[in-house]
Amino acid sequence: MTARITSLADVHPRPRTIAIGMFDGVHRGHRAVIDGADTVVTFDPHPMAILRPDHVPPQLTSLEQKAEILGDLGVHELVLVPFTAETAALTAEAFVDDVIVDRLDARGVRIGENFRFGHAAAGTPELLSRDSRFDTTVVPVLTLDGDVVSSTRVRRLVAEGDVATAARLLGAPYALHGPVVQGEQRGRTLGFPTANLLPPDGRVLPDHGVYACRATVDGELTRAAAVSIGLRPQFESRFGVLVEAYLLDFDGDLYDRQLELTFLQRLRGEQTFASVDELIAQIQRDTDQTRRIVTV
Image (cartoon, rainbow, N blue to C red; front, side, top):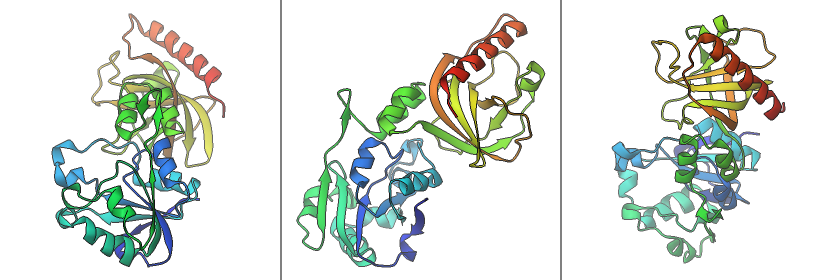
C-alpha cells in the first residue's frame, strides 16, 4: 500500500495522529518518529529552497518513493505543506493553530527531539508539549555506531559509495528509480547490454564505481544487476555521469520502462583498463560476484 499524497489545501479535518518532519530517506530514526502515526506531514519544496536556495541538499528519496515507504509503515496519508516565503514567515503558534489544529484536527503529534518549525525556528518540542489540544510525543534521536542517524549522514555514506552502511541506517537498501533511456549501446558490443537509468534531478548518486544491485522493471520483473556509475573512462562519451545496469539472465527491450535499482554492495571503484579484453574479463568477474551476492 502507498500512502495517499494530499496537498494541505485539499485535506479534510479528522481526528489524526500525525508525524511532522522532512523524513528524507525515511531512515531508522525517522521510522521511530513515524511509528503509530496514520498521517505524515512534510514540506514541499524543501525549506532550504526558499531560505537558502544555494544550499538545498540532494534528496535520498523522491516524493513517490517516500509515499511508498510510508505506506509500507502503515501511514495512510502524506500531507504536503507548501513551503513559501509566507510559510517561512508564519509564527510557530500560527502554524499550530492553522495547520495542526484547524486543518488537520490532530489529536496526537509525533516529532523528533531536534524538530524546529515556524518563523526563525522558534517552534520547539516544548512549545508543542505545552499545548493541551493534542498529545505530543517527542522521540529521542537514534544513534548507531556512536553517531546520530541522520539524512546528512546517509547522504554522505551513499555519496562515498558505502551503500551497505547506508542500508543499515535506512533500514532498507538505497534505491534509485527512473525511466530507461537510450545510450550509446556500448555494452551490447561488449556482450553485456545495459539499461541506462535516468535518475531524477536533485538525487544523491552513489560514488563512481560498480555495484551489486537488485533491479525491478515496472514494479514486476526482478533481476540481479551489475550496475556501473561514472564517466566510462575507457571510452569517449558524449554523456556525463551514467547509471548503467546489466540485468543478469534478461534478454529484452527496456527502453522507456521504469527501472528501480536497489544498491546492496559496492564491488569496486571506477577503473581504466589496458585493453578492451581486460575490461570484458573484469565485467565478467563483476557479474559473477553480483550473482553470488544478490538473491531475487
